[in-house]
Structure formats: C-alpha cells, structure tokens
Image 1 (spheres, helix red, strand yellow):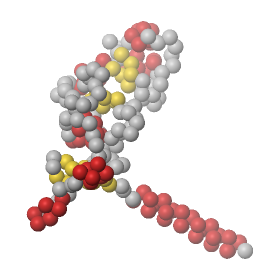
Image 2 (cartoon, rainbow, N blue to C red; image 1 turned 120 degrees about the horizontal axis):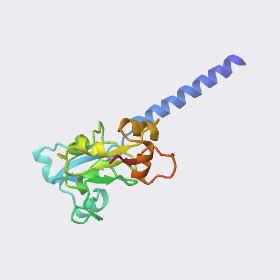
Image 3 (tube, helix red, strand yellow; image 1 turned 120 degrees about the vertical axis):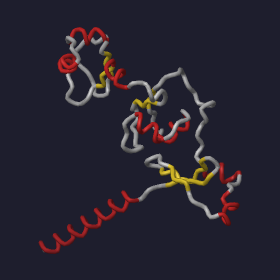
Length: 188
C-alpha cells in the first residue's frame, strides 16, 4: 500500500512539474507591422522581431483592412498621445509595455533600456522611466533624489548624504520616520 501511494504521488508530482515547465515555455506573439514590414510582437516582453519575407511572397504580406483591424496592435502616435506636461520621465501604467512606451515617445527600445539601465524589456506598473533627454547627466539627478530601497532608513539615507534626519524630513515634508520602498526623497 505504501509503495503504491509513493508511486502515485511521484507520478502526480512529475505530471504537475511537466505541465508547469511546458506552460512557462509558451510565448504568445501578435502579428504587427513595423515601418511597413511584417513583424512579431512578444506579448510578455514587448520585444518586436522583423519577419523575413521572400520577394515572391512579398505581395501576399500586405494586410487587408480587416486584418489590420483584427490583428494589428494599435498604438497611439505621439501627436495623439495624451501628455499632461512635458517631462523627461514616464510612470508605467498597468498594461503598458516598453514597446508601447517607445512608440508613444518616438524612441527605440534599446534607447529606453540603456537610459534606464534595464537588462530586459520587462517593466513593472509604477516604475519610473526616463523617456527623453537621455544625454542629461543622470548622476546629477541621482544626487538630488533618493529612491528608497529595501533596508533603507531615514538615518542611513541622511548619513549617506551628509544630512540630518530632521533636514531630510523637512525637505520632504515628513511628519514621521516612516518611509516606503520606492518612495522618492529630495536630498537638496
């Protein structure tokens, strides 16, 4: 009885792990047109890959109006984009990906990745991204703003930046010593 129980458990675990691994390997792609050329958009990462087409098949690639309406990812152009004010930064909203942001602000994925020190195109809701003026010295900006990380305290932040805790609280309008991960604190 014990042997058959172990066999059943082992079989179920193997089946479960196989299903999980298979599900992770599944990547969903959407057909898009980039600069008039057919391409594939990786839904999970936002990466776009140009699809190579033979010259003899090139006339078959032109999408029809119904194909555009049905299969093409619609991204607003910057002229249609709703921009509240001119800023060098963009806060990622739910459902946005780096590709959409690059189109919205007329830049490339590579430029956004480099400017924001991203190793992949994966971004998170609420993340702050530099979207223009990439040549601005980010070291200067980093000296003015501190983004709270895990383990940070007001005391440590003040100590690292030659401030007192009281000065740091005054600069940021804080009434308590409570800070949150991701919170941005002014240093000057």
